[in-house]
Image (tube, rainbow, N blue to C red; front, top):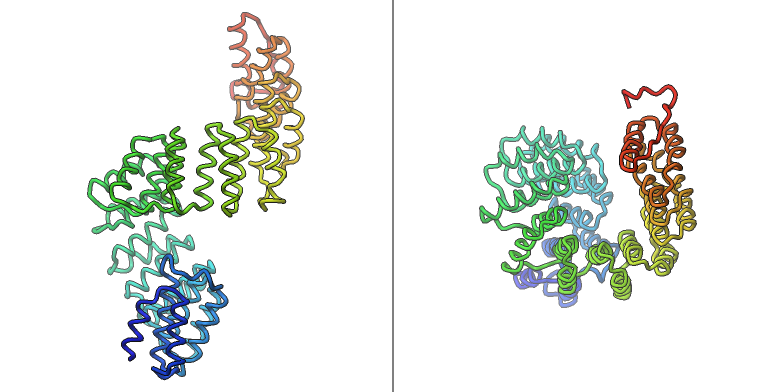
Length: 516
């Protein structure tokens, strides 16, 4: 009978089924209700369900699951180390690190010996708390109990040091242990790429006697995150040449690199590989493909990929919204945004920025104004600098210069270089010299090395035929920003040559032109 019960537990697919099996055991009396091994088996099955992807657990809150697990645990007359390990793991799976650590303290207080399974679960709780002191304390206890040579515990410690940005500690520990495996290497490589130590990561990667798909994926992702997109594509090509099957991390990372470089051909090869091998396109892969095709100008293909995706997360919608926006398809942005909200997906700051950019490029001022006003009240998204800047840029493009100025003044920071730069561009389009001068001064205060401001001003005066009027503003800007004297004088020189009109720029006082 016990064997049949264990078989039922092994086939359990949801917490609801687990509770039914538990209830059946208690109500039918097929086994004594307080049989310790059975409760241990039920606890272990619960951890399996919580850690498995796509398990039906969402119908229960974390508090209900915790209560159920504790009731099982407290039904054990004499909990063993295995029992403690199982409950500690449940707490970490439910992102409850403090109860997990308290259980570990209870384990030690009862003089039960921790094993090499105990420490990985407790170390995970340390990483969830971002506590390096606890991790170091557990490191000492691993040494005390002689458990550090166990690879499972050793790899967990490497991983925690890497997660907590103590990569040098992880590096030292890694080379102190002669017994390392591919998991040890992968954990350290992940820590190195996370802290942008990409050269050290690649050196370790090249030294690995055996690499798995995680090794390749981690390294490719590291290159992508470090904006070394060519290297990411090259390494992916090497991986394919060796017939190593890429995981989704490698695929998403190389698609991102292709999108950044506009490598449509290489990205299409990756997509063909996905289709040829019937790899399931989840929300992450779909987002990578949508981003690739949108950035490479293939909006319809991006749309086809999006529509074929069964799992659309907020970032998948964002990729499609931004794709439409960068190509000026404001009406499509609004249509898909409405669909997104109707389907119950809560937009975030990126979603709203995509909508505003799309409206800006499409000249949909009224619609953008409405969305901006509803950001906090309707969608619960706080306005950020980039949202204000986008609105200011749109108003400036539309010739609503005063509204653009008011929008910038409403920004928490009083306006960044992008907002004032957008206003300056709008002033150039609509020939507003007075506001252009104010915007130019603001840009130069924020980013004094930006010599392009003078070119924009020159264009504004040139379009109006006011060459003589350029002298005074140029002098004022020179006095305010003497470090850029050389750039201004070069601009005047170009104007003089091109228009055969001599413009003399007096030397500002106490400025060493040779050092400008």
